[in-house]
Length: 448
Image (cartoon, rainbow, N blue to C red; front, side):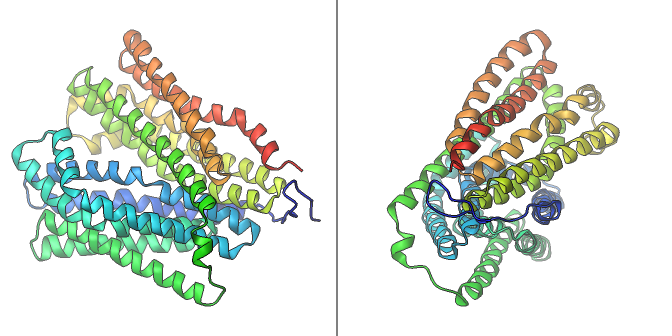
């Protein structure tokens, strides 16, 4: 039965089931896991040359692109939320319009990144401050890979569109093609042809380009079968303004998260090289757990956005409950895994007895951090899908302030234990602050 709404539009009921949640979460979890696999492969390829400077240049170059692409991550998540709402409305033309707006932003931003390449390289070298050989390798890698910026950002927009429609399997296929081609090309160019770190960089450019071509081909074929959106609608100033505002909020969120990791690393360095290295080893556990939690968070983005677009509150509430339940289930499973397998994993990552010993001391903090962070992941997904981005930004900034206070207060008394405690507090405050305002935003959004 349709329900009248304040906007004068009837709701469009749909059922949210565990199967629907997992149809998005599982493929995207696998897709996100291909990202660290790609990084490991690139490191292994360059490692075959036995040159520490090349490995250092690859690692330093990866840091540069982490910052650059984190800046534009909103092209994926923001597009997902807006497309999901249009999908919930059954508004195919608006889905296309959101995609075209995102593609235009991606193209312009990507070209700007390429043009700013020399300044980005100089800034990266200044920030990392590596040895001359490492700086040379880093510059060679970045100067080539940066040409992939336009296609990389276009791929973000295409993936956001696909996920906004709840097509997790297609999203997985596109990521496997992109990263698979990247790996194959990097192996061929760097090892078979002997191009070294430049071969790895060109492999990334080629993989991103192939991913874009395949994604574009799928969408062109789909759009040919239906009505086409007009440029007048694509260029709607109010909708473009809404997208830019939302993307700006997501950007602030992303930079705050980067700053939190940077502060964690900086403070860890104050306790000595061994503790710094141990923290770096343990943070890998959280990053791996994050790829699993991102899958259920993506499901929350799509289903929450679809429910808002459909003006159907029961689906919104059920999608929130189910994704949070699955998120906590995964978080507890990951925590148990790392508690049981953490010691051998630490031994696999590092051969240093001192680093192993310190890492084992702080292992429980790292193992349980996925449980502390799961609500933050899921609430982010719900808020992005519902396009409550300003609230998400504000609660992130509040949490970051609490985190800074916790870092300087707790580390003074408890050292590295206090640092890990502060990071847990940061994640918990993020999750519960968003949870606290979610009921009010839900009532406002679905007011009849």
